[in-house]
Image 1 (cartoon, rainbow, N blue to C red):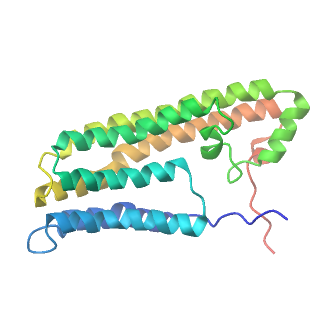
Image 2: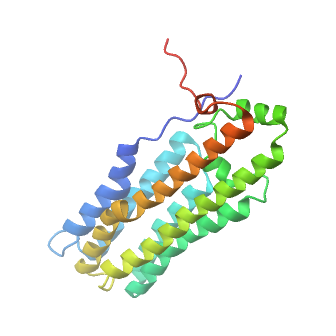
Image 3: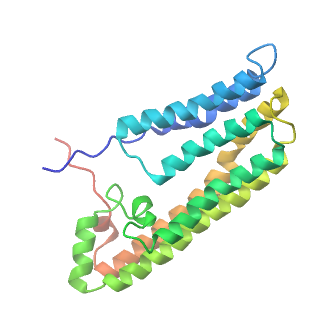
Amino acid sequence: MSAAPPPKENLLINIACNVVAPSVILAKFSKPEWLGPKPGLLIALSFPLAYGLYDLARRRNFNFLSALGFVSTLATGGLGLLKLPPFWFAVKEAVVPSLIGLTVIVSQWTRKPLVRSLLFNDQVIDTPRVEAALATHGRGSDFHQLLLRASWLLAGSFFLSALLNFGLARVIIKSLPDTPEFNEELGRMTLWSWPVIVFPSMAIMLFALWRLLKGLEGLSGLTVDEILRQPPPKS
């Protein structure tokens, strides 16, 4: 008997804890008459940290991306407490997605390519059916090349994110840490990261998924509907 799949992530709770709550606390409640700069920063960062731990305990789905997100949040707090110049926040914002992009590429030559976790996975694709069809048609080598191309596209989305992250941080963050102005700028950057960074990166990831599906369609002889994981029938 197969293990039950982990529960799906609640996107609204994700956005509330990782974007809305930190942005509001940093922008509105980090002033001296409220929480103050340092407590405001720590409380704001506690929301994504707490959500990451909660999601890990609930879904038991630890992975490299979750770990990097956790480390990124800790790094933001550490840089703030050390009162480093704004430039280093921009560097930190660029380093995390760059590391993910490099890992996507390097992992393609390991036993567990990251592209399989992000695109070719059981939540999106009926992997047993697709792999059986590929084996029947003898297209294993072509499938490897298809995954390699998808990996480069996926890595490109993270490299774009790194570039946009750096640019956004340099434009918005001008003040030194441990000041109300810095916290307000950090909150504004967190809020702007969705339209400026997340949406373009997601567009490239969706394009990579579309290219992967069309490639699988040609290699396996299956239709896209047959390739995609179908929801279980309602009882």
